[in-house]
Image (cartoon, rainbow, N blue to C red; front, side, top):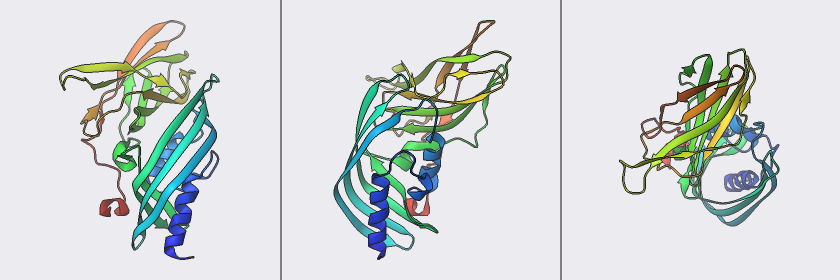
Length: 255
């Protein structure tokens, strides 16, 4: 198989991937790590049907272990929530599609989804210091400033002797009139919300308004309720976005 044929086969395998496909068989680099953080997350959206229509695909250049492609792929996914609601998501994957050659073969390293390049849209925070709110520890893991909204993944450790519930999350956004007018829209939770005593849970908050990729920092706030005895706790995260380096690959830097 030629390099071009191998690149196209790897890209099409990524487009056609279903839930349960080993992520390291289709992705590499920061994009792989981001996908791994969400993989198998309890309470997250589960795809029922996934279709990808490849309208156009062409390998535009090969540069050592990097491949650059032009593509137009329409994806349609039907999802179910933990409460049985059905949702449909329609997306479009376009150039620049970047693949990198690994020891196991070609893997997708970056692409544009709905007009936003993924490596410019995500930030990984696993190495960042956590925030302590009383006996709770809030550890941010990742953020995606997607075209459809803002996704925050964090890990909450409950060191109290009582169950804690995440009641509310807000993510400030830029107002319509100008930068001085700010709005705080409530987020929808897609992951765990109840944290038993002595346990750690991953929580996903999704805000259905997009952030500009130039926003310097994100400051999501959470309201948590301790049960028996009841008490409210508030925590805020200060996460660099445009102020932080984009996750990069050698291939990405050359694109």
